[in-house]
Amino acid sequence: QRQHQQQQTCPALPEVTRSKVLVLILGVVCILMVPVLKMTTGLPPYLGMLLALGILWFVTDSTAFHSLAHLPREEVDVE
Image 1 (tube, rainbow, N blue to C red):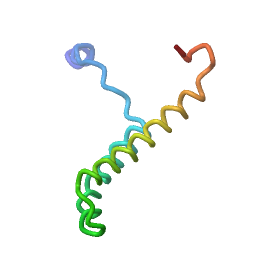
Image 2: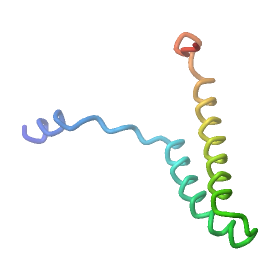
Image 3: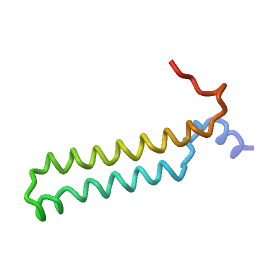
Image 4: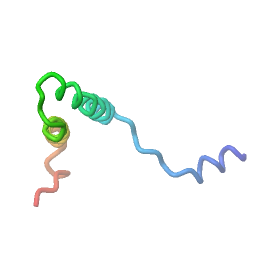
């Protein structure tokens, strides 16, 4: 009885998907890549962060486009 009440009061947790885990891991790797890129190439750290941002942007945009491509046409809201 008590456990059932706790489950009803807890807010719904977001679903963990493969693409969310990929973006999280890629983001951490990109952040860790910045000092390595600075040591190997001598580029300023802000350029490494811009490169990391560009990589993350490309991956998230690609995964979002891929998921939208598989939706039926009625569910896609194009404005």
